[in-house]
Image (tube, rainbow, N blue to C red; front, side, top):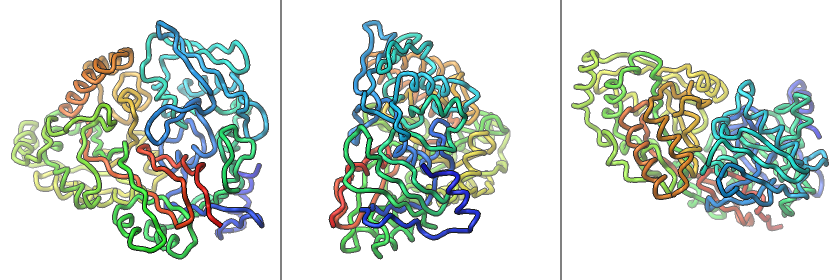
Length: 502
C-alpha cells in the first residue's frame, strides 16, 4: 500500500498536479476545500480529518443517516441484564487492508490505546467506564463496565473509536501507515492537494459501485462550485451557505442539505482573566445577538441553539439564560465585575473550515465592542488552530464543534472532572460533573431528558461558552451521481452507496 512514503516522494519532487486514475477505472471525483490535518483516527478532532478517516477505518458500530445504530466491525451486540457487560460479536468477514482478519485482540489493543492517556485520544472520556476487556475467542469481545452506561453504544459509533490492527499499534505506525478495515484504501495522497482512495475489494460491508474516489483539495468554496460546473468534480462538500444557494441555479447540479448536530460556539477560556469571572462571562452571553450573527454569516441557514442539539434532547433555547440580546444587562454585569470600562482580549478563529468563521468572528467583535469589550481577531490555519485549541491557548475562540446523538457522549469530555478535553473547556463545577454522571447511568429515557435539561440550563447560566446556532450540512453532485443520503453528523460515509452513470 502506498501512502506516506509515496506522498513524501511526491512532495520532494514538487508534484502538485491531480493524481491520475488507472486506465479503465470508474472514478468518483470528489472535491472539498479543507484537507485532513492528521491520519491517526484516535487523536484527530477536526471535521476535515474525520471525513477522510471514516472512509478508511471502521468502529465497532456506526450511525446511519437516521441516527440509528448499525453494524460496522461488529455484527451484533448485547448488554448483560445488570448493564455491566457489553458483548460484541465481530463480523467474521471483516478484514484489514493487509488481508488479516479483524479479531478481538485488535479490538482490545485499540481500546487499550484509546484509554491510555499518553495517546491523547480525543474521545477517551466516552469509554472510561470500561474497566476490563475480555476476548473469549477471536470473534467475541466483552467490555466489562464499572456500572450501567446508557450512552456507550452511541459513543462507540465514531471513527475516533476505530479498530486498528494490534500489530500496527505495537509497531507504532498508526497515523503514518493506513491499514484500516474500511471501504477504501489510501492509494496515494499529496497533503493539501489531492488523494486517491481505491475501493477495497474485500470490504465486508458489500460491493461499491465504482472503483475509486479521486479527491481534489481546492483553495476555496467558490472553486468547488466552479469545478462542479466544469465537470471536474462529480461531488463536492460545501461549507459556505452562500455557495450552497448558488448550486440549484446551475442546470445539471443538485444540492443536498440537512440540519446538522454540529454547533457554532464562542468558547471563553475561564483560565484566563477576566473570563474566570462569572459576571464577565454572563455579560458576554447577554451582549451577543445570536440571530443577527446567524442571519448575517450563514444567511439564516440554521437555528439558534442551546448546548443540546440532538433532536431527542433539544429544547427551545429562549428559556435559557440571556438568549435575547440585552446590552444594558451586559454593561451592568461588567460593572459588577469591575470592568465598567470594558477590557481587551483576543478572539481566535480558523481559516477555511468553516469558511464562515471569519464573518462570525467579525460580528462578535462588533457586538461586544458595543459594551466596551475590544477584541483582536487572530485567524489561524486549521492545523495551527487545532493545536492551540487542544492546548487551550486562547482567550476566546470561534469554534464549530461536532454534535452527538447523546448529550453524554457529546459533552462528557469537556464538562466532567476527568474529561480528556477539560483543558479546552477550562471550567467545571460539581453540578455539571454530577449531572453528567447521572446521565451516564440512568437508562430511563424520560429521566435522562430531565437530567440533561437541568445540565443544559446550568451550563448556559454559567456561560463558560456562548452557544450560538446550528447550521446545515451541504453536498452537491452532478447529474448521474445518485444514492448519497446526507446525515445530520455531516458524515460522508454515504459515498459507499453512490452509483455513477456512464
